[in-house]
Image (cartoon, rainbow, N blue to C red; front, side, top):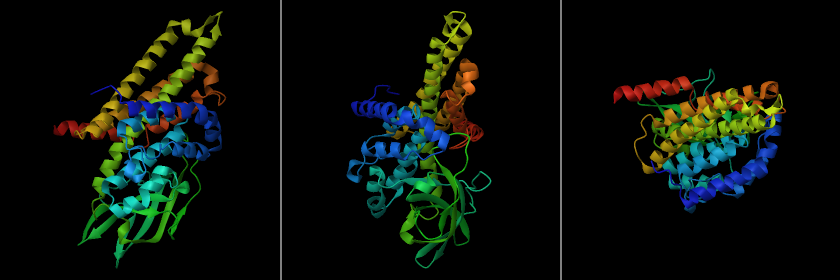
Length: 379
């Protein structure tokens, strides 16, 4: 793995770091407290091209790679994890599948608007009960002449109420055989409605809601990829989404580490900074080491994906380790701050809640372990 970043990657990282500290960080606590979609922050990212990082320039994007996107997500997450979630989803779960599997007409219709931020996308997979059946999701699409009719319910649709496009997965039946298919669905299509925003533990500004599809009529051209080819679309999206989730977790962990370290230097006990205590120093050493390890796993997965190399278990390993590191680091940060760590006046309380969610979304830690073991046992 080559750890030398290209000039373009460094430039994007530095731009993201600047925007994160100058424009996004000052809003982060209020976004979390009010569970407010980070519209101003997203608009700022759109102006810098950060909603279409991997979209080719011909379609209005920056024409960069997964590694560049990972660098950007970490910087954004260190300021506001909710904003980073929306940016990561737009790039890795919406734009990339459209470019990879979409027709020329679909690319022309959606990619320029998505890359510019004129349109936002969401990813509708999970169904009530918190899961998804790959062999036959309850959400179904049936043929009616040249049209598709979608019916069902999707839960935890992040960014859904703000989005103009949804990537939706549904079961289709051909010659008596049921398979998974993906669709590009404008959210203003008649029959689509959203419930109230979920009151979430963390990532609260990345507003999530339940989407109801009541006989939603779509043209045949709404199909993304081939009929019954949804597994391939989903696998590709999951690879990108989980790499993005790993970068998000690293950014959250970094923010918690920075807050805890600064506090340990400033907070005095018996006339000396608590950073002088060996117990605190051990925590700081472990936190930094774990963050670097998680970052390297995320970078390995990203560079392998960009090189077209087989990913194997790399993606799940990166997501698993990074999310659990984020939770441990954020927990240690709360411990270092003591009582202050439990107060919303200090950012580590928010980082602690955001970090926990990273162990659940984009596939729980348990799912990642099952996937890793399944791949390793076949090798």
